[in-house]
Length: 87
Image (cartoon, rainbow, N blue to C red; front, side, top):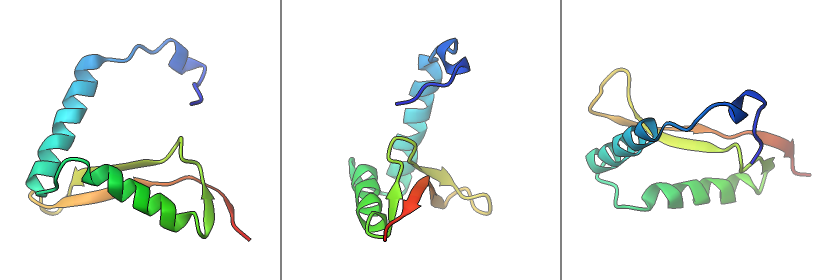
């Protein structure tokens, strides 16, 4: 995992991490997803995309979020850095 120059001085705030994890658990519960489903979704996405492109798995970020239009709906957001296309 790479660390930026300013990340060295930045302390991890365990309160914020706990809040983020709780938010994810609540969203998974609302979406009626069993525990571990997000990790399996992430693995499947990596497997499929790896057939076509090389993915930076360390920078990969897949998360759930409330939809802006309807907070009762859940959206899957993915930020998948691509290193290069496979030949």
